[in-house]
Image 1 (cartoon, helix red, strand yellow):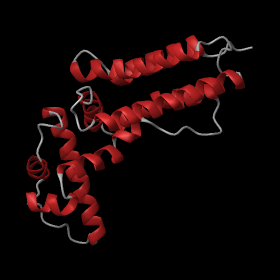
Image 2 (cartoon, helix red, strand yellow; image 1 turned 180 degrees about the horizontal axis):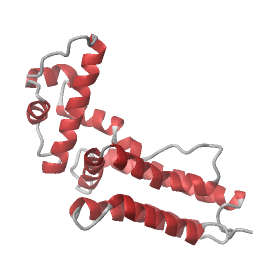
Image 3 (cartoon, helix red, strand yellow; image 1 turned 180 degrees about the vertical axis):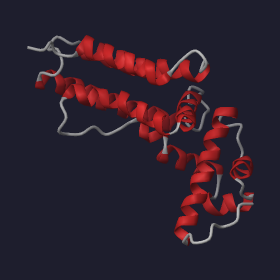
Image 4 (cartoon, one colour; image 1 turned 90 degrees about the vertical axis):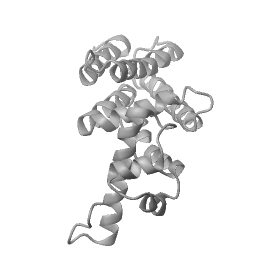
Length: 205
């Protein structure tokens, strides 16, 4: 059991224990998937008792909710409203690279959790479906804004571009999760990002 660090206030200790529990949840999601992971395992991995986990969150589902709010939702960023349409599209690629640079293990857990939602019985399914739908709305709006502001080609098929962009992000992520030894997520995101610019960006005058 980790002993309290001297000098930390109670809110700081709560924040630290919550962070450890979410990190432990991320590790176990990658190793076992969410449904096969128990609250007791999360507590043991983080170095806390099951009673402490229950006191902090109440249930495994509450840990899942916290993980999704704290991490998974970051995959669906809000773009700078003053940015042009192309920059708003690229924000989604930039965010994946940012998260990967900060913590590759947690980034992997985010995608594993998202892919687990393919099962119709998964408790993650509705949340992930909602996040994907929201991301599609943001990218669709960015594409249309880019056509209007001149940062994207005026002849773009928005629906086809939307499918291309969203499938590119998750296709790369799936390969990275399943074959990490053969795929460099950051490099491949950069390559696709450059292809998106070349394919859909307006020709410089």
